[in-house]
Image (cartoon, rainbow, N blue to C red; front, top):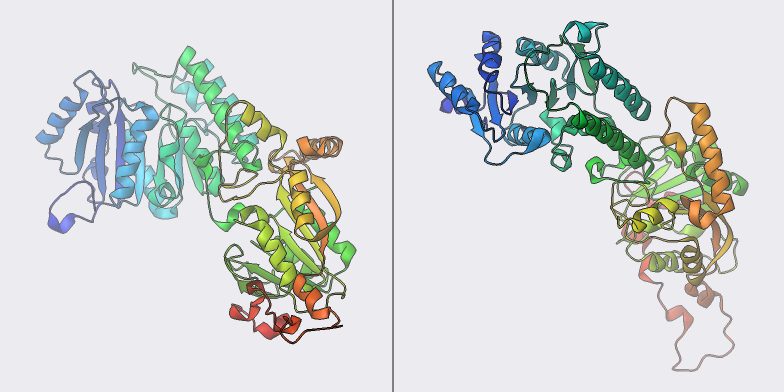
Amino acid sequence: MSLIRRGEKDLHRAKILVVVVAYEAEKHVIETFERIPDTVLRDPEVDFVCLDDASTDAGADLLASWAAERKLDNLTVLHNPINQGYGGNQKLGYRLAVDGGYEFVILLHGDGQYAPELLDRFIDTWREERPDVVLGSRIAEPGGARRGGMPVYKLAGNRVLTTIQNSLTGLGLSEYHTGYRGYSTDFLSRIPFELDTNDFHFDTEILLQAAHLGARIVEFPIPTRYADEVSHVAGISGVRYGANVIKATIGYRMHQLGVFTSLRYRDLGTSRYRDKTQMLYSSHRLALEAVRKVKPKRVLDLGCGPGAVARECREMGAEVVGVDLVEPPRGTVDHFFRADLDTEPVPADPFDFDCVLLLDVIEHLSEPERFLIGLRNSSKHPAYQENPTFVLSTPNVAFAAIRANLLLGRFTYADRGIMDVTHKRLFTRSSLSAALRDCGYKIRSVQPVPVPFENIVTGRPRLSRFLTRFASFLSRLWPTMFAFQFLVVCEPLPGVSQILSASEQRYVGAHAPRPEDSPLPRESAAEDLAPTSSPPTQLG
């Protein structure tokens, strides 16, 4: 429903909301609205809300009187009872936009620093291109910022911060620090913007969320105007703002790695599991090297995700069967079974395959030991056939950064990495090895996987390779401390059902239990699950 009620027939007409944030802006707020083109101010698809952030002046009352005189039925003026801060005030406006059914929201400052005359440019850009984010950049036009009166120290700080941020995010924006911007409400509904700061670097954090989601960002140049408005980001506040921006951006990059994490960037879609097959020393690449040594004809990929590793196995000439909750892209697997590995039986016999992949799976299971034992017991094959090779990876909960966070009293989850919010069980090297041995698996090798710096340092391949090699050296030197993950190559010993079925009967009493009367455990009921794209007979 539209925020402003123009009449029953017009309740759903407004598609665009202009959020005007104001604080102690009595001298400028009316002038700001008077500079808005009349075609925008009277547009039936545009509503306005002015959020006065607990100002002590009369700005909100003056604007309300001005709107009443002009009978503007598409403007609401709200006075916050408690100061929310620059970011907190924006949150109120964006929540109104999302809950009110708008499609696009534009941020405008009530002090007139950003040209209200350009609102139609934002609206036209959104209507024509439908981007997720629209930015009005003061830096895009060479010399424009200085002509508009931007102080040299602010321009220099802006450029330095933007350069650092571009190197960490890869966005390539001309300016991160403009306060003139627009967002589609579809984008806003996908990010937890209410977790962002209430301070001035809110603008940075929301752009980092856009980078995390791969949102489409469009920029265009805007004029710069510095007059007699009060700057709330100057002096010591400006230094603190810069420090907060750098801290937030580094935190974003660390989140991509999974070392330092934040729920601001949570994205629970399968896209959070990225293709690491081409990354130096990544778990995917090391797993593929282990698979190549096996030279498998058939591979079972349990928890195949987006299918990056499965695709590479197919290129080796292997037939690949994938199992997961979400079907991977076409062409990544030969056959696919949909199953929840945490609650449902595995719809395939692991002993039908030469190689079984369990990459980043067991940490998502409530009872990984029960699952691993079930894989052994589910087979109907003879006890002493050649056993498949299992390639398994899982994060190292004793990684140095996790230890440092615990030392500082921090234990935070995110959507990927070691502290992935969907992880239910975490392991150290010793606890992983013990679990596998206890569950009946013969361990061939345990390999440390270093921090994937190629995910952190973008645009500088030499530096990323150097850091990755250094991380690899540290992980080999002290694996329990510096390994980001562990990759295990092992083989399952015959399960109890296989042993019983192969046992030679030397003497069986009349009332004694017979091995053939003992049904296979529930984990073996592969026929209970039907494949989504191939018949069960194709699994052998």
